Length: 228
Figure 1 (spheres, helix red, strand yellow):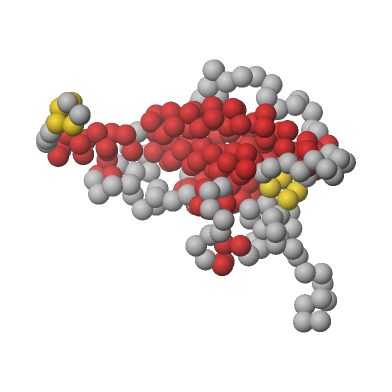
Figure 2: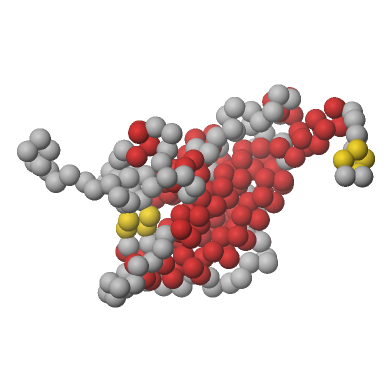
């Protein structure tokens, strides 16, 4: 096989081996997580500036949320790669499971479903589980599309660590909690965060803008107003 003057093997088995070796390797998934984490670090200063603007009393300043949405989407993909790396590292799947492509139970952006596959190998707080629920929505649609594929995707859900709300809610604490959960998942995987990362991206102490909560255009109906 020749393409642009470069010769590639014609043997289908060669390509199958290349494919299976990539998708079945915990280290390859970790490398992808490392790359995504590096991109999050590039976006983080703009994300923090957005939250500062949202908390600012200067009403003439209208921060744009595109960087935050993209940041949350990439954070979801990072955790997806980390979780899949850990699933593979714990031997939940064999090479045979990849003979027909990515196994169905791994072919998902549902971060909580992936986390639950690890059972006793992963410890998550209620806040961590709720964060994975919200980030999953950014992987599926909220970080790249105007709406999900069905109306169910915009309806409120019940969270464990706080009241029911819209799953695509943006919280000022998200960058700090994403950082803390990433550190913990890398630690539980026996890894430290990539040494090439810049340091002190997040302020050491909680900031006033971390109280910001945005639920998008959906407004809750006051109790007793329904049917009035």
